[in-house]
Image (cartoon, rainbow, N blue to C red; front, side):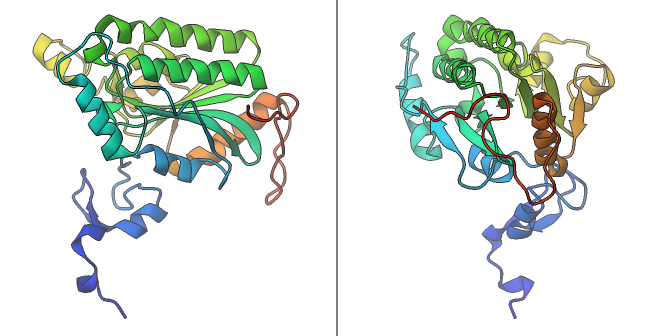
Length: 285
């Protein structure tokens, strides 16, 4: 029998909050939530898909958009190219079509590993196209937010993604299609000020940091903010968030919401739904 001493050290994870050493495989079974103190580890896009969508159901969209350097910012293009090579991602958000309990849904998942999940032209374009495809295919949309804000290397072009994505969300609402946002740690800046807080239902994982001005901006500008103002708990207590949730309840909650939006009861356990509950089942182009 393998003892604790025989397990390679890289299979251990230290909890940033309670500093407990956790066996990585056991932590994965806990959905990357510390069993000792409840700290929610930050997830990458692949991990988020793994614990959210039905196995084998995800088809990516718009993964072929080119890297852009609209301002010729020094070393920016090289930095973005290195981020692609390091993460295996094309940009700071993964979008596509998947299924939750058999319900077809459009998904967007931001990944902090790609330049802090910051929003530049490509991120804004992918999210806008996500909303447009959801309209075309009569799909609900679910957006997982994790970002440091607008990408400074793209300046005004990055900021213009705020109204662009917000407009796309508005058109989704005009079509009568639901939009759910899940705010994870951290969600800051232009993302917070646009599509992150425009959901018909806004969910946040417990302990997630969020706000318009990030902690560095707060520090250098000497803003006098109340304690814990930039937390999911503070936003929930003040009515900015609809649901404050533990990650272990998130998948079932999303599934339940999608059934509610469709006006249909959930199927009995073990009997998944089928097709698109908001319209005729469609296929990807």
